[in-house]
Image (tube, rainbow, N blue to C red; front, side, top):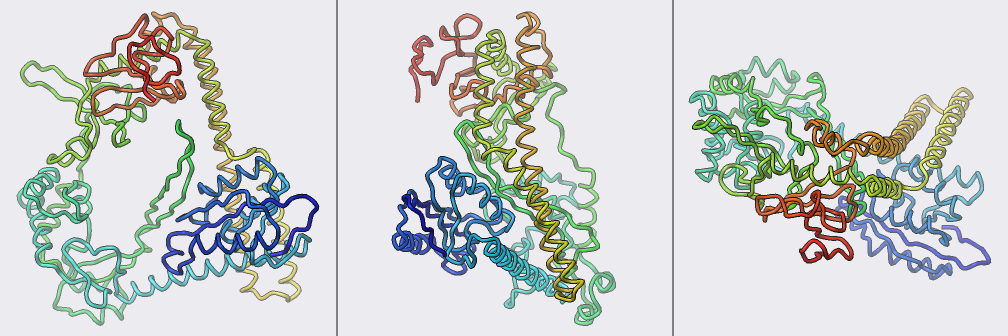
Length: 596
């Protein structure tokens, strides 16, 4: 790592990152990285401003809590350098490394790593850039070799040992195929008999298993209709004769099979999983979650692997598949529009969206509609969530609309709340999106220049065709990354623009309506207003409901003990917030103690 010579004080941030698999594989610990960075900072005369760590975070994304902290500190100014043990601790994607370098340079900050090979000259930057691309290429080759190895293994008729085999099987000693587990397979056989031969529904089947305490595949306590549906569709339980299997596998694999036996079929390479970490701005600040996208691959890419026959009669399997082929979840909307569904009403205890339930009383023909937690009494045996109350839809919706309509009748308070919500969204954005977009556009231009340079080298015989193909493939990945980041920047800008449009629409349309006009809005129009306000209503186990959204940090009780809260004029307390203020600095007019 080159030294930084200057006349002013040198201030540094120490950054360490390790992904879960890295630490498990090589003991590449955070403590070891930080200790090495401390020694380097002391030796080079850096004043350490802060030590930032990112445990269990992948370098394939910049959406990391620790990296966000580093970027915030750099943006605040006064940071000479951000130090890391290796360049790939900052990012494993060279395009992200480039973006960080450009962003930090805007604030007079350098990125430094022990394995830097160049200096700050154009030639030095080129050297480091080449090393980054070579590192990325090597990681890609390792991943590709692993993928091809698994594919080759499947083509040889071997299964990939995962966390656990399909229910009813266990792995053989070599862990490359299955062996029937008679005790568990008897459960699966009974499941197929119930659905295929005895005409049980999937729900009745899982309820029977749950009542009897049959151990489910996941190792928990309850069976789910989803698992039963997937098991019925799985060819690993369906019996195939030798001729059927022979058409699915290679001649070498078929030659090792006994023509007199029957087999199940396990498929490899059915899906591709893409996991990304994303940040979400909420009332309590920025949070992070992983988003996994499952992509079904064409059947032509599936690789069939013969496995031992399950012993389940094929006619039961086929009958069960026929029985569920048109299976659809029955609608529970009761023929009405539910204003608080689809992202307004949440369970405060487990965080799930509240679901709807409509029941018909056969005695009087009346329909009763409720909101309830989806984990309330799940599996019909025991509650998974403690929030067991149901809330009559009409009363809950009236309470929420009472709050919102009171807000719409006060345009100044509405405008202030909307402006604050927009500012919070803008503050949660990382840096200036226009500057970030400009950096990625410049990277686009550089990629094109590099592509032309590679083509010139190849034309002069300085690169082989294979080297050219590999270099162009790396540049194409960088181009795709830049496109994805530009799309994400556009998405963040569109969110702000949408918030501003909604603010103008609320102030120009709904806030100008008469009280009678507001009360006459349809449920669909009310739901649209809730969306514009980014309203979130939480229901607690004790029965009370609280609302957030345009109310910013203020939390208001709307509904408690099965009935709307007592309130002052127009459903508001004297300070103009809402029934029974829960959090509101200085509010003493609601008759309820302030709760922090």
